[in-house]
Picture 1 (cartoon, rainbow, N blue to C red):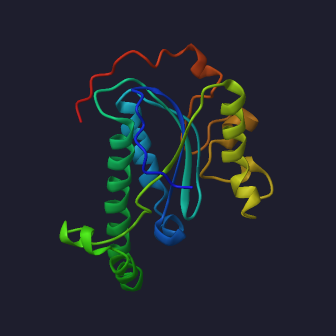
Picture 2: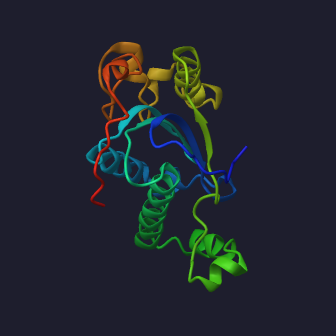
Length: 197
């Protein structure tokens, strides 16, 4: 499911999934859901849009509208995962959770270890699908929002705190404010945003 292929377009709406290493529920273990929200803040500051999301205990699904930038979408996502990894490791260190830290350290392959990588926090690649049509976009939004229900975490999508479902189902923003895919129709993503970070 995960891909290492490069996103070649400069802008667009993408359904992105990235997973904690070996599906370990690191967001739950660390209560590190806020690390994803901090990354979302950074994306918004860079002119991108968060359309829908769910932060599960061990993976993230997000629908992100990327405005044209000087950085590749792959590097934006890679840098985000790196930032979140440092934050999650820091939370584990603060908790004194040596067992999980040792486990993450043992998963680093020899090549990455030579590059001074200390912990394998996320699976190395991520899944991506470009959303070309409203129908496909709606399919992905529904998939995102029903994910916690399928996992048995809640009965209704809007009950899951770390999701944009509340806004889509009730009109009230949840923990993190998003723009709906319908509101996004009025946004020109091809306008180049100058990246300063």
